[in-house]
Length: 278
Length: 261
Image (cartoon, rainbow over all chains, first blue to last red; front, side, top):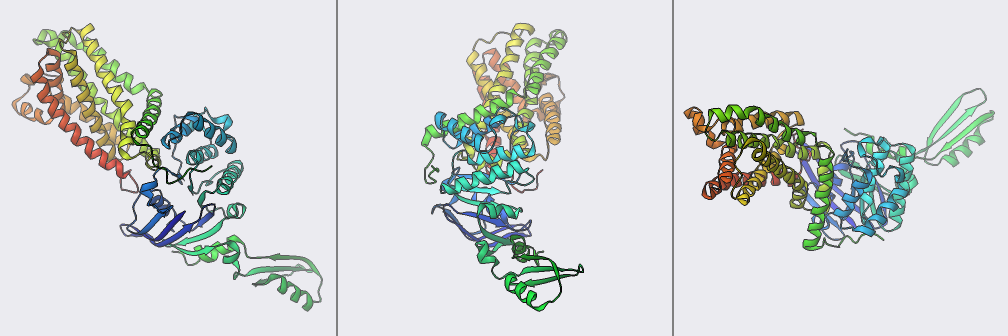
């Protein structure tokens, strides 16, 4: 569905993308991780055809972004709503711009309103919505025309639990219907819930790509044992279970608690994206 | 069922559909914020009434001067309507959101500015009708000529407002430039004092003001002078086209991460 190869983008002195390569298949959710300035938003803007790359290629279903204008759903990082327009008016505008008419438009709006818990807010102006409600409205404008490619740039930034859950539910549903999804976030547990594959960006390129299991297999977990006298033993290990068994064999003191932790997504992120970051 | 990403937008009908959606949306936004427009209609009405005795006593054709002069001056003030409407798309970050849609830049611009154009035409029409009814402006013998002048002038103002929106850094800056610019250009163009009473240097400088050409065009149109209307109309149209092309090129690129704002 989406194939980006060796993308390069420079803003004056700043090298925003430096050989950024990423592919996303239909039905796949890719969690795009990286610290601020890693190139995530620049990548989204190039795929959205908002800016042009200085080098490299992007195709969506084999076509350049300019040829599939409007058939990509984009929820930008910043809220982009008309304060004096209602939720319904936003959805009608973006639905109509994508070619939806009357019955199909109304049906799409009602479906989304239910999924994103906007039903009671449809006639409220965007400027009067809470931050989470604005996030859901913005996501709805990206989803109303049921695009085959979804670019969601930190869609849950600063959002409440209700918003986050609604967003995850609808993203999973759309991916289940065959949409390719690029989902940038700093909330790593969301990617576990979405069962997303992971791409980690750093310094304008993707430095790791795969499933969580593939990427985390070489990362150390941790065994934490607390002894009867409150002494705590922590061992970083690539095989926490074997290490714990070995420890139990070797000690003759009473143990008051045991904690075995495999490498988490946080560990993975820290080891790849944050470590040595500028 | 997901949208087929290979599906193209359907031709002219699709284009009209999208422009209609944008125009409808922008009309809603405009109607929800009518204060500025109302003031640009009410203020010149009051000023026309107050200044009419002075102009009628001081000048031959004083009623025409006060009605068309203030109409031109306050129509220039309306540049800020267009500027603010477009600049708000930047501050709300909605312009880039629209650029991601299926509508190309030309459709976005037409859909955005169509309601503003209608509002500007309505403002000028109301003020001219008011001039005829309350100020003593002669009833035009060729209304279609007046309509042509209004359409051309509204187009030029809209384009100039769009240019300003792409150049300024904030609503405050736009407000200052449009207000000071409106007063300067329309006064220099003879909207307050007839050109013949102005110093020689000002009479020369007036030719650089769109307000000068607009005033001649309006007064000629009201008088039913076809040739006298078409020549300044051509100048105003050229100004509008140049400004429109410049604004369209800037807006098609979006504001992105440029230095403005």
